[in-house]
Length: 254
Image (cartoon, rainbow, N blue to C red; front, side, top):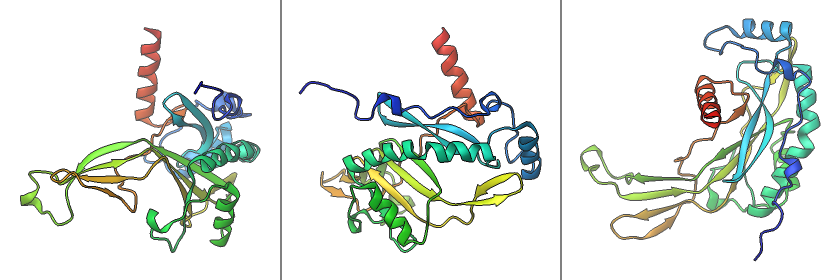
């Protein structure tokens, strides 16, 4: 085999620019520091976007971007225009991931059991599933959860018997796609709450458990919840991200 072009074209990776790009890095207090009303008032007055670019890996060499909502902020009309205009590009990327690995759809009545969920390989079928849940997706949230390996104890073990773990759990890299709807508020929009449970999971392979004593391997019927979403945004909006972002810039300049 000879390496060819990227699975997803490079020109598709970058999200479009925001019409209020010069305000993206304007400081806005976190929801725990200011009231929602104060935050939204500042946003509307200074035209500070309520969305930010999230960075989603495909593999260790390839990332792509999409626009997502910053917690506690209102979605301005300019934000909504960006989200809607970028939707075809985002869906085109997701459709390729669905085609390659398949997607498992879960709704209000689902057990989130991978064994009970037949994967679908067509993005339109995922949207059709959402419609069967009486949901018309207006906003997509995509999380990438990197592979994770942890030692685990059996459910039968207790505090006194937990000197030695029983299993090694392996959770492969996967993506979670959540579907949201919007509701109008003063000055813009916000995500509709409470959110209706409707999502699609794309797994690169199946999670499994390996018994430390016997070596027996068991395919897990559901997520082991070992991994955590990789939350990278540009520009960074959380304190931990700002620290990481600043450190990476310092290292690149060194």
